[in-house]
Length: 408
Image (tube, rainbow, N blue to C red; front, side):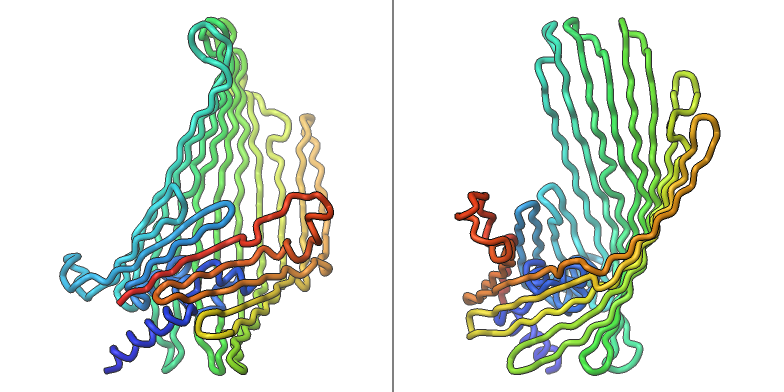
């Protein structure tokens, strides 16, 4: 009976348009604090074990710069061999060039994702004895993620999610040829590394939530430049930059229900440490180039606050809005510059920020049978004045849209 009530409750969420698409999160002004809303958006982004709570569901989203979607399907017992506890299987498309899958078994879930993209651009012919060059781009992304939910005590569940991502390994090749077809120059830029994010969230009394994020990123960028004369390598330089980034974020929020409206209030202080180290060399001679050994350390503390509200106008339409603002922030930057003569110069600056303008958000949801449409309104249409008087290009009224379909 409890299981049947849970299923009915989930389908009532689909019917009421309260599933958390990315468009809904952004329409509430919670883009950097999605954890404040306990819905299926978190299953895709943060806590894959939650997928099993939202079966029979398809979501597609599109913005001006990207698109993604996913579909959740419950499998019968035994279909996936050892995972015979009636898991939910979710296919995901993080972007137009990517895909992945999630298995979720109640309190536990895990998944994989992969994306790649390749392109080549010609600037004049590079054959037939004609001068020219070409640029090729290659990128891929591999992700491994998992999550687990457990109870500290009654009515206090804890969600844990771990995401390990190997991004970009992106290569950019510029090759120039002369009128004989011989290569005269090659330029290469490659970026690779690893991203690790650990997310934790717990329900607290009085409709409150607690949140923590621990993130680590190691990124290496390598720039190679070669020139050739008569087929002989004449210059070969290698410039690399290694970045190590540690981010710690804490959060607390409260949901207030008043008169048919949900009000979300939250705060998310964060601390970010970014260390960057350069290594530049002439590969032909083995000599160091200018900037070799230069380093930059940037430490930042931010204190943003979030407020969002949404409520139903009628059975079809729900409206929402929100605002977020960094009420205080401080950044300390230390640079170390090593000159060719061996002299070292160290400089430290401290900047405090308290006057950032608030970021406004608006959104609307329409429910039409089993289909829910969430739209994030482009607030530039409202805050930047009448474009038809200034002659500026009118931006899109809708900056993001999501379509969710739930079936029984």
